[in-house]
Image (cartoon, rainbow, N blue to C red; front, side):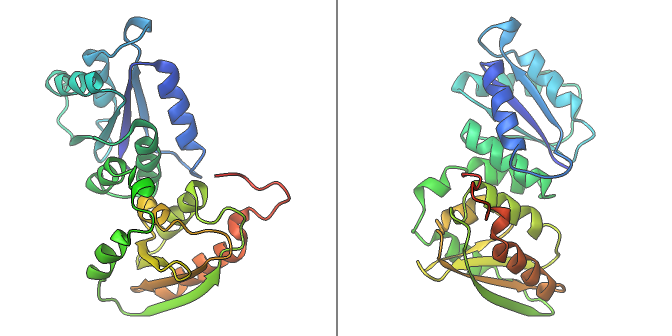
Length: 245
């Protein structure tokens, strides 16, 4: 699993960001280390960052999230101070949204490059809703598989596909070997890769929107059935007081 290091000028900010991200996943979380608040105050410490990276030497790679420009500089210096040589990528993504995307991606078993990409582009869900950008990428990379399955469902949960529901979809998609896409046929947005939190959020799918689920691969039928069940169950949010995004 990919490890994550949070570099922040504020220990409280780093801890709160980690706690928020961990609320979005189920099961064993990815290994996370915090390097924040130099000397117990406000700032960053390259030595502490290097130690945090070294602590994750047994992972498949590390994504480092930083909050401000000087945190990036401290992290760059830390790369020269560390004693290990496992692969590390420093994300340029937003600290809070990027950390959430990185944690969800790492928990879902995505590669170092994929986790870093999700973190780097974590604001895309805000800026590309309705742009159809995800559709061009997904449709141009559809793999050849042994079977194709699809189903159209209606989003019955109150808030549609938001961060929590998208996280649930990403984690469920990781259980299957097939490629899975979702399209919002009501708005015409998509397809979005079900393994990508950012693409799913970019759909901007709302309550009562019609969603096309499509999968291609050796377990496509099972994958579509599982996601169809999740959607029909309202992502577990059909209680009188559903969890807000």
